Length: 92
Ligand code: HEC
Image 1 (spheres, rainbow, N blue to C red):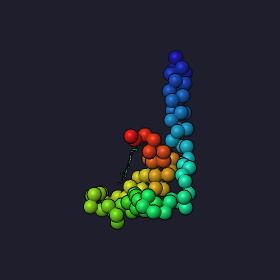
Image 2 (image 1 turned 90 degrees about the vertical axis):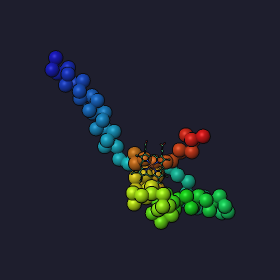
Image 3 (image 1 turned 45 degrees about the vertical axis):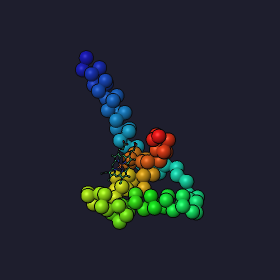
Image 4 (image 1 turned 30 degrees about the horizontal axis):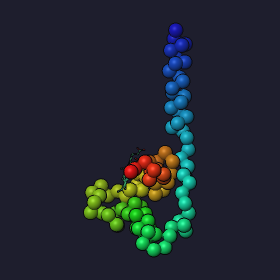
């Protein structure tokens, strides 16, 4: 009975350990040089600055002293670190 209980406990633990130890990797994002010239490209570059240098470009809106990329690592492109890659498909 104890053996069965230990096995039942070990399976979810093993799954959990595997998930936690998965090494963060970069998700596929378009190269920066593909950002277009013109107003659209300007908006994309500005948005990136707001995200990675929030304390310079949007400080009045963030009291914590953090940048968005303080948590969304590598400008939101790192897996398992609150990535934003592909999110445009989620929101209306
Ligand atoms: C203190 C840490 C932290 C900071 C700073 C932060 N975020 Fe987040 N953010 C999170 C976490 C954690 C989540 C939830 C991630 C998840 O559900 O996988 C999240 C979720 C999001 C989501 C929704 C993602 C989804 O999967 O639906 C967006 C969009 C977002 N953040 C944008 C921003 C922006 C823009 C800023 C800067 C103005 C910012 N975040 C700053 C931690 C942070």
